[in-house]
Amino acid sequence: MEVKIWSDVRCPFCYIGKRKFEMALEKFPHKAKVKVIWQSFELDPNLKTNAGISAIEHLSEAKGISKSQAEGMQEHVANIAKEVGIDFNSKNTVVANSFNAHRLIQLAKTKGLGNEIEEALFKAYFAEGRNIDDKEILLKTGVSIGLDESEVKEIFSSDVYTKEVRKDEMQAQSIGINGVPFFVLNNKYAVSGAQSPETFLEVLEQTWEEMEKENSPLIITEGESCSADGTCN
Image 1: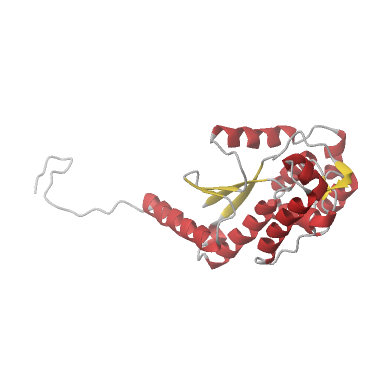
Image 2 (image 1 turned 60 degrees about the horizontal axis):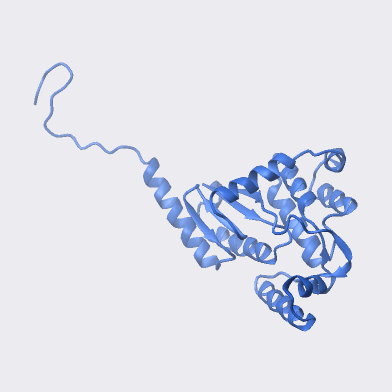
């Protein structure tokens, strides 16, 4: 079974959704046969990295709300994250464009390390307050999960993996995805948002059941018929 997940490293509910999906997957009896493919999606492609202001200040300006309201929104999300074992460090979150992080994810996918790089980048951004557009941070993060240092450095000196990021985003646009996280199972069932583990498990089971029916052999019950040699009985 194939599960594609469109996500952005800057999206708190993508991190929360990842954890909830993993909780469901742990209870799924066929989890070893589930292939997870992470797809790129930039929430704000035009965002300029600015380590000089806090995420709360940025949210306040972007939404046209007070800082106290922005803090309340961040606290609300942080409380939801705690329920699934994630500690958000919202006060130290850096305002950063995620494009280069997505290119790093595309590199990791070619090595079978898509899930590992997603987790490492989410942790760096939300828990550790790292700048996910900083070359050194991306290099350390990539190397920490087993990527080759020279291959990671190539991202910063070329446009490598740009096409792959754009391809994912074009595919998202073609199927009407306008928010993340967004999960597509076997190109048939879709789940939008950080749903409960129970919902994810239900969709996994339903998708698996239908896949099994589609792949089941034809059952033949013999009755009266005529064979190719013209004998009828």
